[in-house]
Image (cartoon, rainbow, N blue to C red; front, side, top):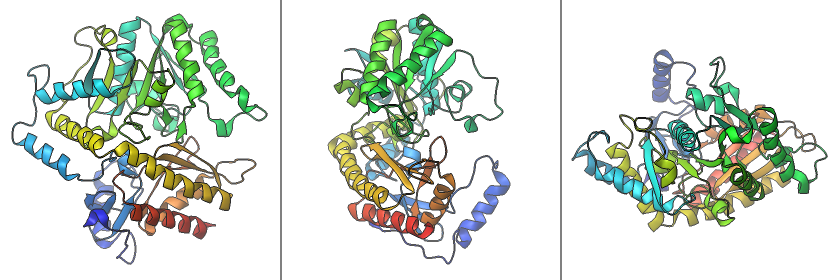
Length: 450
């Protein structure tokens, strides 16, 4: 079965002839801005494996950029969606109530580690939409106009979320952007200012937020502070718990809502159902949580969860939409959660992360080009540098590594402010044999490039 297969390249070159023909058609039909990075045209996918149209087998460590925590084509999810298609495809929730939407909202309200005993949830179609809706809710509840985001942040590609996103390669030429979005420094410990003692780091980064209060928006005009528990596009940088606790205290002091953007970190990726469970354990739960990606195994849906008093402050007509909470997506999401809880996916994520982290730390010891390794659960980043002392980012090496690895049957992807981080996002259905095979391919690829 494909789900248990190992990487295998059978064509003389990549892309193979069938894949090349389709990629050529793609070039003529699809905007070039939607880049074709990999020489892979998928024919089918199972677990953590992809078979292309030429019969090559690739191990996928990208997982749809965090969408496929439950793997490709999980049979129980497939069956749940099939059964829903036999009843109805769509029913706009403002027009007809469908039970799947209600059941999913109830379930997420029990799972999401947000402040409050009584919670409500509603749905959108993408991570960007979830984040934009979270901002609407925060503004409606606080009656304040501004938000604070961070260096390295990625929150989406809508007009508002482009302004929230730090890396302007995602927004080049798209301005002017909405006002009222201000940026503080995210605690990127590997790249702390030279001479900053580690024990002073939390205070240094908290002072950055206070500088926003002084220079851009007084705290009484800030509706929310938005934080990724582990930055995705920013380079897989975990938010230190001691810093999160300080941010939570700052929010409480000034009546600001804390929003956890769990679009990528949710659904067992970080060793918990939601990464902000670590915050909850430290007494720093968020007020609003957004999530998407792996919620429904690839069927488009996203979610926003908050306590009742926050949700019910939103005027009628401000939130919702035609496809939001589509019945097929709700059926998929309910089954995803059922399987993840039953089969202990959070525990498996921790096991995968432990194996991968130990090997990645060996890479760091053996190859000076690996400057830093960090992560939560099985969401791990490897930062590549030209020199371990200067820490100069080495994006060319990472770009070459992506192409070298795929030639050997392993799909990996870059990330980071400087494009010099490899992200580990393998589906949690990956077998140990596949995991070790992928680790071997990655090391072979590093050695080949060095």
